[in-house]
Image 1 (cartoon, helix red, strand yellow):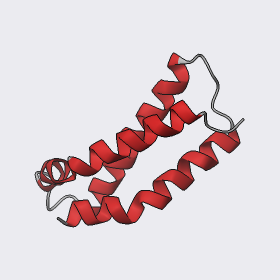
Image 2 (cartoon, one colour; image 1 turned 60 degrees about the vertical axis):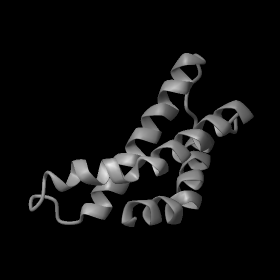
Image 3 (cartoon, rainbow, N blue to C red; image 1 turned 180 degrees about the vertical axis):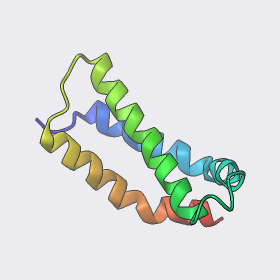
Image 4 (cartoon, helix red, strand yellow; image 1 turned 180 degrees about the horizontal axis):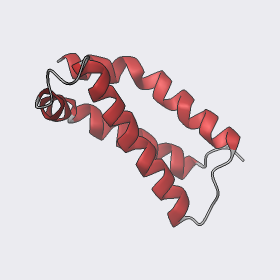
Length: 91
């Protein structure tokens, strides 16, 4: 089963929100420097993780199980937005 329109829209909105807050997440990561080798990569990971958590929560709320094709579509959405996320992180 593919992502529902509701879930896809929800994920797109989550990504847009985290893009708007990317500099805040970057500041959080900078607090762990020099332990963090790449501030940009760590920030990207946090944002992707937050969106993934929201994705799982949406499925849980709908009492659905995440299937392989759902994960593949989720990954494609993140990959398609990766350049925008990185641009926001770099400021």
